[in-house]
Image 1 (cartoon, rainbow, N blue to C red):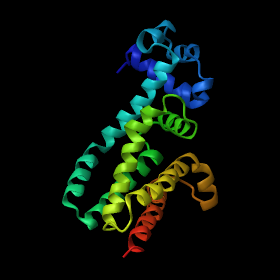
Image 2 (cartoon, rainbow, N blue to C red):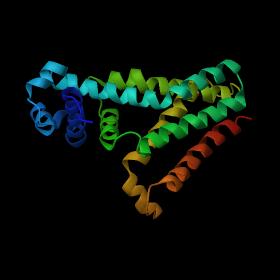
Image 3 (cartoon, rainbow, N blue to C red):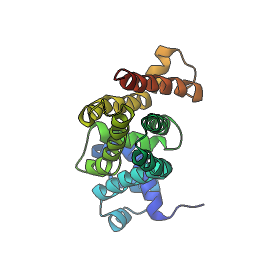
Length: 211
């Protein structure tokens, strides 16, 4: 099905922002790639900053779509105050986000824009932070605190989650390097499962060491 002009421009913007970053991408190149008059960017998005903000909002919505059911399950687990269920839920979130970053459900360009904004924030970082990153940290930290039966304080739980979250970006952005060192021929389900098992071991260690 043919994309409408607004969707086509947004798709083109992802390509350009992924390739050149916010600073290097131009509205002229975005419009040219889309085959649409440059004035349409001003009409639909108000300019380069507007279409970049729309791209970040699109990422937030795409991830929310993939995690809606998890969010409902999270609320139930937190309501029940069950330590073992919290640990399982923590691992579920880890799997979903790791596979989103290292899998195919999010486009390569979408992941590149996300990683670029995360590592070199622009004025619009708040879109990702408030809509996606902060809620993720809060849920993961709350689950870790509950899974440890409150032996890990919420402040410590947040501290543990920063490097934990960062690993997922490394696994996504340094795929070639990881494959080289690990002598992996592919980066498919068996390899991603090994990465996941490694992250699970960290969760087990954090929780079990507090018993």
